[in-house]
Amino acid sequence: MAERLGVAIVGVGGAVATTAIAGIEMIKAGSNSFDGLPLAGRDVAGMVAYRDIEFGGWDLADESLGTLALRHGVIGEKELADGAAALNDMRAWKAAGSTGYCANIDGRNKMETGHRAAIRQIQDDLRRFTAEKQLDRVVVVNLASTERVPHADDAALQSRAAFEQGLDSDDAAISPAMLYAYAAIDAGTPYANFTPSVAADIAPLAEMAAERNVPVAGKDGKTGQTFMKTVIAPALRDRALHVDGWFSTNILGNSDGLALDDPKSLQSKLGTKGSVLNSILGYPVEDHIVMIHYYRPRGDDKEAWDNIDLTGFMGQKMQLKLNFLCKDSILAAPLAIEIARCLDLAQQRGEGGVQEQMGLFFKLPQTSGAHDPVHAVPEQQRILDDWLDGKGA
Image 1: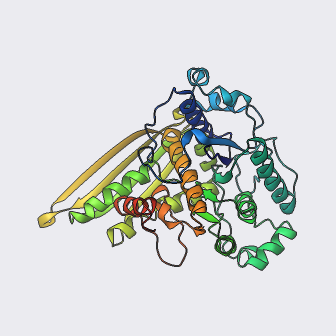
Image 2: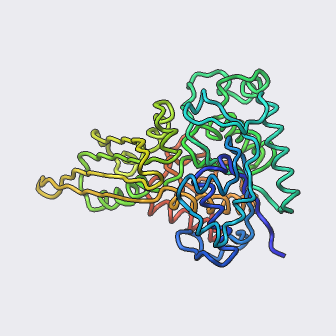
């Protein structure tokens, strides 16, 4: 009998999560192809099949996931009637939330306050999910809205002991994203951070994951503009075309865009999007500008513009312009699914701590040491392929 994997999603009522669930349910019903799923063509021993994935999770919204999906506008009545009807019967578990960390996102479906109480509730939810769905294993994936950056000198984030004390005292420095990460790692459950929020990448939680041999990965899913940037930049480098400047701007109107309309949350996102070029090119791009604008009419149909100024042979100036009109959640949902499958495979292989081979999926890949992450897509793809083939990370 095939083994069953549960994917517990933080932000399960969001556009990315409901799109991921709808897509898998439609695969089960035979009404969806495997297009867009990067690993669908790979035969990897031990990797769970798409049809054997079950979903649950937490959200501040208390409506059915079908209602929320229709509101996001990525899928419609056609998809709900064509295999994704399970969304109509699904509701989120009560969630941990903080307007202090995510100013523009709130809701009624909140769990009881207090850090330790929240952790107990998260772990109780994971146990209940496992039992009710008769799952063999579970992973946690954070798809929630972007939180602000914590203060670097917050005492609770400096050491394992300080973090535990912060949990006991309900220290405001500890964010909801950190609570979910701690609860998962403490329960021995793999955890992935698809958001720019700070979570398992703080030293206390990264150390805890390594010590307990729990796979973790993140952060910030590499879906649209940054994906294209990390494809194009290696080619420009290899052709010795000097990048004089790179101007990037985005407009989007979904809930992610609304969260980023808060300047503090926006700063988290810009930090992950803006860090890739210098690493790939090997020199600083002084005029690398990244902008994100919330534009409600666009909804989930994100538009990204890039203008690249180049210097070539004999000092001749050139420009490259890219306009990517993409569906944010349609790009992100398959990555979240593949991340869950890879984390589960890592756990089956006994590989805990930071999973650097999964850097292909993230804008700011978490590393297990002080070294810089790999950002260039061709190299990231090779690293992941070698690991999937059992050749090591």
